[in-house]
Image (cartoon, rainbow, N blue to C red; front, side, top):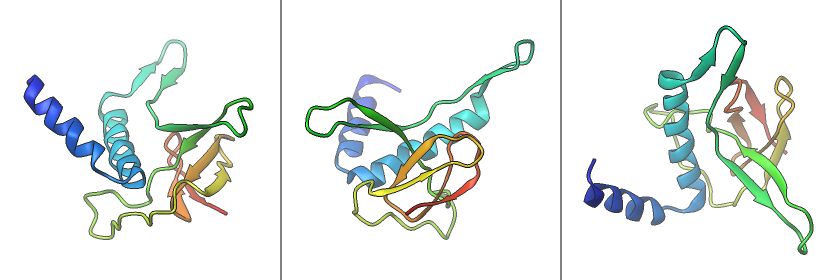
Length: 119
């Protein structure tokens, strides 16, 4: 991909609402993790790319959360773009024990793939 294509891609991504941008990036990261995931069998280590958000209230310390993936793949016929609610839905993955945020009430943990339900 040349510089012109990359600039057009970036411009197109910047036009998306942040919730839809998060779904697009999460879907791309998920597909990359499935195809190019990093696993060191000798040490038992595994790494995955994921999307996160950092929030600071009143200039306080930054709190980090992982953005949950949509429960539907963008290639699924059941995919619906998220409502424009910002990332106001929260939960904690029971398996990974990481904090998750989403613009939707249901999602998937981008690390273990478990379904999660937000409040």
